[in-house]
Length: 360
Image 1 (tube, rainbow, N blue to C red):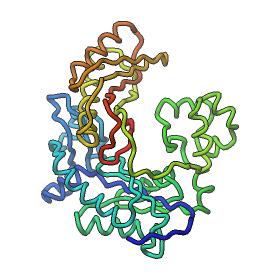
Image 2 (cartoon, rainbow, N blue to C red; image 1 turned 90 degrees about the horizontal axis):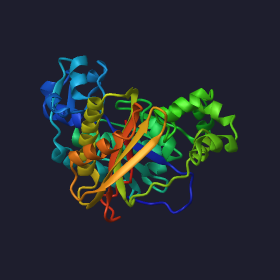
Image 3 (spheres, one colour; image 1 turned 120 degrees about the vertical axis):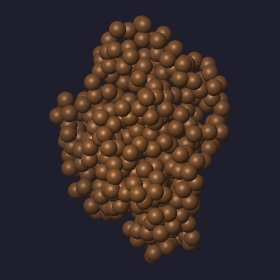
Image 4 (tube, one colour; image 1 turned 180 degrees about the vertical axis):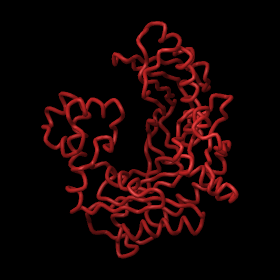
């Protein structure tokens, strides 16, 4: 890998493997090709889908969906258990490919990463050709497809990587940014979830072009500190750097429900699914970190937010259930969001993966 020393416009690549877990299983068992395939927990244990191929998605199956629901939508679904050891091994080889081009690699997960190739001299410094070469090398070495986005910053690169999925490459040049973002839906902005999107639309703000008409003061008044991010990103501005090493202090998962949960059993089932996702994320990116406590986050239909935590050095589902029961008894309003997570005893860096909340 050669590096150029002169300063340049940022060139960021976001690489996202296509249906990673399912794609590996299909690669290793070709008889699964052209069939609906998913990887996840079993239905009789209130499991959830980790990922599925695009054939399964045609039936409405998607990640984080309860396995029981997925099997109702697609009775022919081939459900395979999670083989994390195998996926980690493949991911290690894929990330090694990234490092052949730049040391500025920020992993987001096993199957996803940002690369800063601003100063990479390979292919005459063309980020587009570098992204193409990365995808070709992954396909040649691992027989897996990857989608990539190329842009002047992380926000746009991530949007671009999903533009032509699967097995796609999409490029947003600096001079194209202005026209590209104006028609972008507000949901594409980093950090905009279902609740924020609903609030934006209630204000008549559906696209980045709509947001551009708002003053910074107005956005901060309605969305607090997040208003600054809305103001910048609707204009295609994102100054976040690609950071290979990030300190992780906590890890959590959460879900905003399409329909508020009122029944206790439904809440417990949701907790079970969240717990499985949290266990997966811990194994993925923080297996060596010591847990200090477990915490729960509950947002009710009236938008009242409650959090609670409990000292716990060993992760258990029962601790989250106890936290929920203690909090649930104090409030009778239906629940619109549930989140669970852990804080770590130390801030040591593990595998360069950034602190994050998994939204689904």
